[in-house]
Image 1 (cartoon, helix red, strand yellow):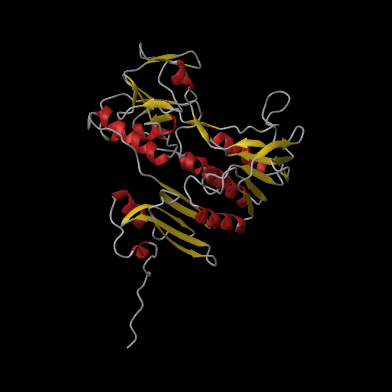
Image 2: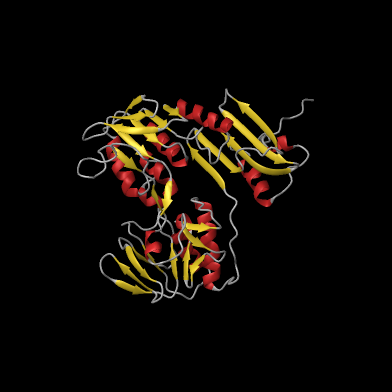
Length: 394
């Protein structure tokens, strides 16, 4: 996604450069954030395609080695290519949890066990789900919740096992997470927060999941959604600076003529792992490389986490847990399944969360992004005005 955005922006800025995108997958760049909607049939794989401007695409062409001094790269098929500037947008790989029974005797993944990171993963999962009876999703972050909702939409009973104290703890406070949990229950998804999956049961095929408590969940389909880890192997082998991700400065460079953006990049000790920072990085680097703004520097992105999936929708921004010196304003409606929360310090928004009703999400996020004061009545930010004002009786 980051590479596609960079190529599109370079083209839009009229960069005088030949741009080539190398990707190991057979597909052209696509929006990974919508993969769960392909699983449900809401989108076709072709609907996820991203524009790349005038860039030359080399799909199915994995880069296996770099020579940053000689400015050449080597492909898996033995081909080599020269470059003037190199941008690493290698993304991230799914994290495998320390579960007993992940692998069959031949070292392959157990039948019925899936990750969900690529369109190929999605196709395999859809085929398996067509004959499965019960599913367990291990991980209750954004991907885990999306995958569980998608499997439930296919008619499967689904359970989420999440090691964190509540669902989506990176983005939501406990109250908002409870509202999401209730919404999932209405879709047929049960959740087990503050629980750890310990082992998989079954011989050739997965038959269940054992929790650390000793409890066993029946399942013939298991999805691992335990987060992702930046893909840094290529950079590490080339001698580039690597921590959790490929370490870049404010120009997004990790070496002369070499840059990293997106899920693989670590900036000021932070790996963002979200689409909005990746696109902001791509936009800034396009301005630098095209000459439109050669002095541009990236200092971070304020991001909004948002999911809209039928009856399940939430939006969150800024801090989740409130600092000790902050004020918190909450509105909850258990009947409608909605929850709205603001965290303020004085008249400044520090964060917020909306579940079940996103009518004011745009207003709130703009106020937060622009640093505008909340005003004398912050409650008004949580309540959308009526669509049609009532007429005064005469």
